[in-house]
Length: 198
Image 1: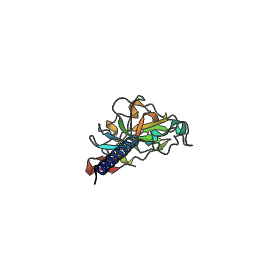
Image 2: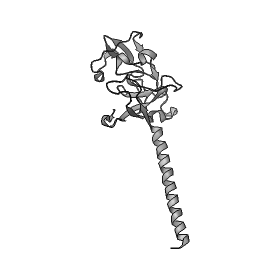
Image 3: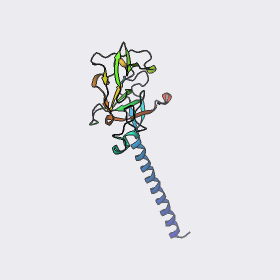
Image 4: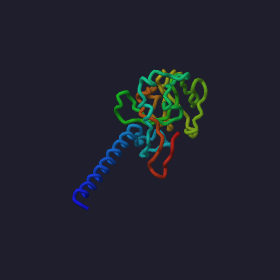
């Protein structure tokens, strides 16, 4: 094999490595845009999520262009995006619209347009008691709340599963969709606690 053939082989190999590296970088960027990784920093979601555990978050809903889903609403009053948060989902969000501070992890309780009330230790949505098996019998109270609360067309009511030890919508009120990072889809750490979240 001549010198030219050797250099051609090296050149082809270098181009292949460079191309693979660029494809891997592009794939990483796309995945990072759609999937976020977060660590739990509080006890507010116990016993279902514990401090130090890590989760993957689906950020796809917030990549949809506003002109496509921003003003459209379903008949029930909530956003029509197929990836919008649903009741019972665990979400990651910021307490403010500027997305500053540590993101919080809570469960979606009330959807846009619904009426939320806490009475007798139970949560009522549109006057109906909400079944919350993830609470394991813990009662819900709120001394600061002035009920009933009617959520706006782009508002969500969120609460932690550890109701006595959770700073949530009972403290800071409903959140808007632009504060939401995404929905928790997987607890991936520690490895013996890997769990898919619906």
